[in-house]
Length: 171
Image (tube, rainbow, N blue to C red; front, top):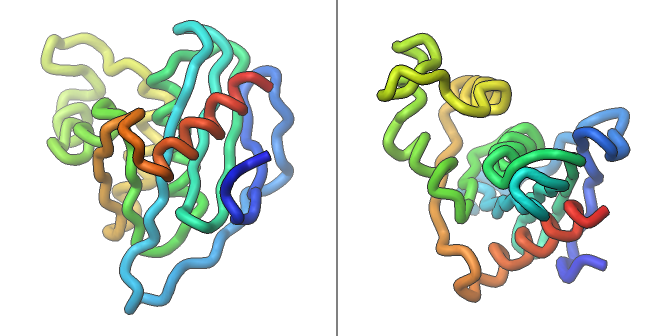
């Protein structure tokens, strides 16, 4: 079972996974305590292959889900999207994915929108079906920040998100 003492929220899913009937809205800290911090991670057994995503709040709630045939990048995007959807308060999303963090830090998404979802090389943006709802969720509020953490570096909560994502991928 999970090492976190928190509440397991459930699994969202892709192909081959059970899907919950609804997505809970979770409690947030008081404004004085600052933003909610949530760690996210994605994992894939083979790339492509069965994958899992997870988010975890330090000493709090967590969720995970899987997709029967996916890529690591898609699971990283799913983890961030599900975390943003779960919390309706100021949020810091901590990820070891430069793919996710740099998109927001360096505002890649603004150019994608301006260019009609093509990248600098004039090729269609990969994983648009996940980027689009993630960017929409981000743009729909002004209280989400992204922070990078080095993966597998001994950060307790990044390691926990990784463990939960791998567990989901193995389901």
